[in-house]
Structure formats: structure tokens, C-alpha cells
Amino acid sequence: MPPAAIPPQPPAAADPLVLVIARRRVLRLLVGAIAVVLLAHAVRSALVLSWPPPRGFAQTELLRILDIGGEAAIGTWLTIGMMLGVVVVAGVIALAERRAGSVQWRGWVGVAIVFGYASIDEQLQLHESLVLPMRGLLGITSGPLWLAWVVPALVLVAVLALVFAPFAARLPRRTRTGVVVAIGLWLAGAIGVEMLDAATFPWREAMEPVRSHLVSAGLVALEETMEMLGVALLLHALLGHVRDHAPASAGARLVVR
Image (tube, rainbow, N blue to C red):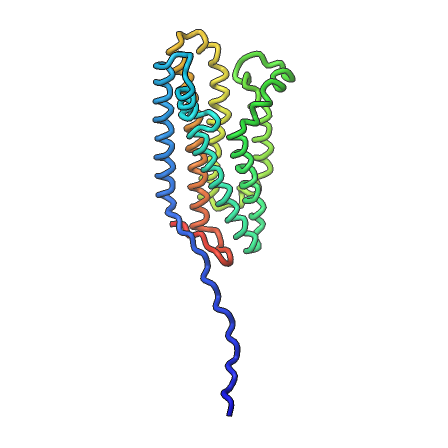
């Protein structure tokens, strides 16, 4: 008598991919990286004063890399990396919210889009192309709006605040407070200190060179530090939202502790 056929067994369910992130450790790591960037900026300021022009290629490249507010420099790389972290975490939350049937997923997609564009602008400095056209259009000759890209930036911030207001109102209070504080700090650095820089430019031009350089370097450090801390705190707030509120997505889990 032939043996009874064994019915086929369904394939075993794959274990979900679990990524564990220590939220506070990430924040400490980012704050430490920001401190290193600030130290590099201070070293650069000392080198600028120690190396009068003309400078060799190696000297010029080193000063460029250490420039906290320059393109293709360590401060820019850190900011872009943190912004891309915001994009990824906001995207994970959006996916989880959509699978859970929540309308909030659209707002998280919007957050990812805004900071995705901001990361591109951080490297390419696209906003700088608006300075001359806006000066000509508005007749700006001096003052806090001299770096005139801030004018359309303020308008855009106001529009985005209105667009995101319903989304923000539905967020848990702790998440909303963290996001608002972080974005406020980021904007205060990117726009507020930029306006202060423009307003004080004639005053700094009248100073003796060393003092003018130190004041200018201090303003740049203040602006970039506020921006970097703002993005770091935003990433911290989003990870806190994942830990406390975001539903788990099928097939993968982001565990924050």
C-alpha cells in the first residue's frame, strides 16, 4: 500500500525586519557632531587670520572644507545628512499612517517633501539666485532685507504654515510642540540671523579687519548652529512620535527607544 501523500505546507511567514534606534543616543551623537563642526569653524577663523592671501591650493581647500556655512564643507554635509534623516523618518511614518487608514499620512509626505527640497537647497544654494532679482524688484539698497531671498522665503513660510496648520493641529501635543520648536529654531537661524547679518553689514565694514572677520564668523556660527540644532531636534521629535504613536507597518518595524 503506497504511503499517504503529505499535503504541501504553506511557506513560513518571514520575520519582519526590525530596526532599533536609541533616540537619545542619536541626539547626543548629533549634538557632538555639531560641536565638532563648530570647533572646525573656530580653527578655520584662526587659520584665515594666520594665512593672509595669496594662499596655496592646499590651504584654500582646507579653509573651504572647514567653512561651517560653505558648500561641500563638513557643516553642510552634516546638515544635509540630518535633513535626509528627517525625510526617511517622515516617510516611514507616512507609510505606517496610510496603511492604518489615517489622513495624517499626507502631512507626513509634505514634511518629507519640504525637507527633501531643503537638503538640495542646502548644497546648491538655490535661494541665493533670488537675491539680485528681488533687490531690483523691491528696490532694496540696504538693511535687514539686503539678502533679499528672505522676502520670498518669509512668504513661503507663511503659506506653508497655513497649509500645514490642520495637520499640526491633529498631531499629539508632545509631537506638535517638538516639531514647532525645532522648525522655529531652524527658521530663526536660516532667516532671522541672515537678516541680522545683512542689517549689520555696514557696521562691520567700518571695523578694522580682524574684528570684522571675528564678528562675521560669529554670526555665521550662530546661524548654522541654530539651523543644525533645529534639524537635530526635529529628527528627535519625529523619532519620539514613532516610539509613542506611529502604527507598525507590515513587513518591517522601526523600533525607537
